[in-house]
Image (cartoon, rainbow, N blue to C red; front, side):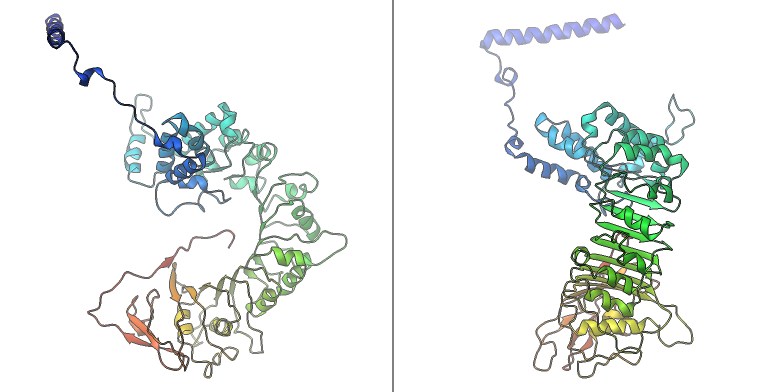
Length: 547
């Protein structure tokens, strides 16, 4: 049967060839459709400069432009699938030689190893990973991030050219904790590496991470961010004189038991230090910032974060900012559960002429002091987190934190913060209180707080408010308009993007604020028949390391 089938195929092919030959003899030429080759296609991208081509490829995979020193969890994008973007960029590398150089340079610059696809493709791939095969009868799921790390390790160890391109390497928490050996072999050839996600044991000198830390110290001199946690006091004290990580820009210290002399010597060993985060150092006090002949000064930094350091007060920071080099450098300051009380913030703002962003997170147990306290004043401050909280009491009519927000309103309405454009508060009623502030001749600050003469609030301000039990920031945009003879707004101002209290309807964008003729505002209810817009904006509340 098989022989008969093959014989028929041969007869058919011979018949077709004979028909073509006879047609050629009759016409004397071959059909143009079959004889002429296809017209060549001109590649328009060859005219583009290499910089423009690189920008196009960067739009294919946006996370390749992430040159920050944030971890995988901190640098996740809001939308899109980073694994799919990297796959598309890898396809661009294979298109032609003209695309190869720029696309490959982006592909191996800032590498992310994500655990899953953030798209529908993950459902299909997850089913394939659990499928049983001839080599795996058990059907155990594949650890995809670990396999991706192993493939990257093999690639960079085989090609030093590709290894030299890598500037940052990010991976999930479980992958870096469970693959310490693979990670050590990978970074051992990455001479230009600036940031890498590391297991927690590296920061505390854990014995299981000793090899990985040694490889990092010897093979990666370009590291820009490092952390020392409780247990690493020994290696921390050996930094002076070792010329380790001379390009370090960001340093985090957590729970270290070190004295002032050791701390100052280590900090001055990093000539390019720009950001410093200090958390839970029990020996850190105001004396750390004072001038001592036998010790170097506390170095100037652009970003300073102090968390859980009750020994540091406004006196110590004012001493630190009394030096001109520190005043010119400091632009971001975060104070969380420190000895700096909100009533002493004015001392810091006066001595920080370059400060752009201030964060104050404090839980108070007493009301704002009644004595005369200077208002918050700064000509450079652009954004401020003023998150003052207090425990609620069934016997108190108001929270103790209310008096602190009254003090803030007094500072705002006195125009002593003219460049402030973003404000974060932990008081859900703060936008209403600010917008409905009585006119200057009536405003006095209330009985629970200091009383100051108000000049009226006249600058645009974006207010992000959040209650004690809320998770997301509620957004209110305040845009003051032209004022009339009596200080009232001449046309209605829509309270569009704030979440109103139950007394105003309890819903978003259901009322309109108009001038009351005395500099304040009145609420005009909206008709039920008018169209409704979408809900108010919400601010992303993810934790920021340097906030």
